[in-house]
Image 1: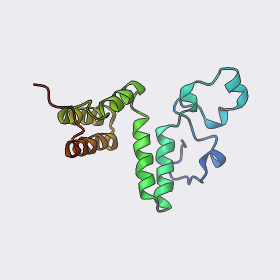
Image 2: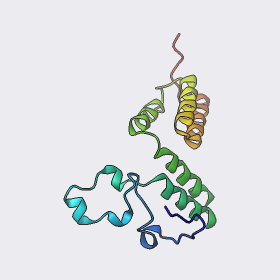
Image 3: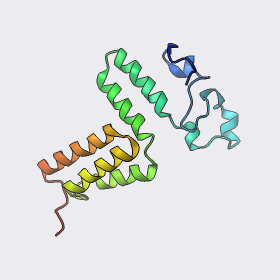
Image 4: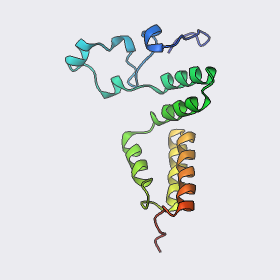
Length: 142
């Protein structure tokens, strides 16, 4: 975002740092305007938030005393590194009755290791525990 890691950022980022904040595609926020959108020069990743921006937002939230919001933003930052197809597979696997306890644990380990997504892996593990406790798991196949 910036060549000087000690440079302070001011909130809101979109107002004060349009040159330094980039979208998921790497396009600077300042390059997003209505003309480019209407002419088709802007794609989906050009309007998607980057992990770095979410991590910076998390730092603002933590500094302001919103620890839970900060954790959610860090989880979202992590999820930007997971392909959409994998996200859909996670959602499908986590629907009640779709996965066994061990399938969910395996999924959590795979996602955490492949995408450095510890928050997401922990969330899937927590869901596996909750599903086990409430009877929402798929019955083991013999």
